[in-house]
Length: 264
Image (tube, rainbow, N blue to C red; front, top):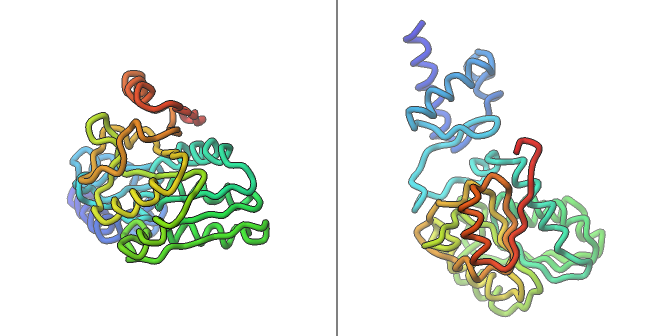
């Protein structure tokens, strides 16, 4: 029985590493066991640091400084928090505004809400964000969606000289930036050097910078800083942040919006 359990866990690790992220339901179907069994296996593997357990599944473990998880791997992390953050961020946008959205799973959720706001001009370097706006009927509401060119990254971003050149010619009212990590020392950071330069160009194109980041981003440091904490005009985060950490952010950023989920 023990041997079978270890074999099953080895198979789970192999699938997580191959795909970047897997759901409990998928693993249960693949392995022919109950979802409760899979959850117990994931608990064991997470304690061994072989996988990262997230809501509804697991993602691969990587070096946070230079390893960039794929879009699907990040999309299953903190879904309730990201949805609440997206709702609060969307409330900052007025019809007719010129808006910039970086790549990321939180900005992807924000795009679903911006698709309902009429007459926007939305500039993004994210394939996923552009697709959401298109399928969500943004054009039908009189909005214009502009997708930069560039080289594709694991996070579905378009980066590089082509994207940077396009962004440097723009003047946007508000830019929403998703980040890999945030800390007092490193500010808002990313594990991708090329994406950093593109995100920096996006930040510089806007009159107002709004960072959207859930509590798990605090203390994570990517290899390259996009912006210092104080460069953000607004931070939208969730109440999972410890009081001392929130106090650091409030000391650096003019406005910090803290949302709460049912789970918190």
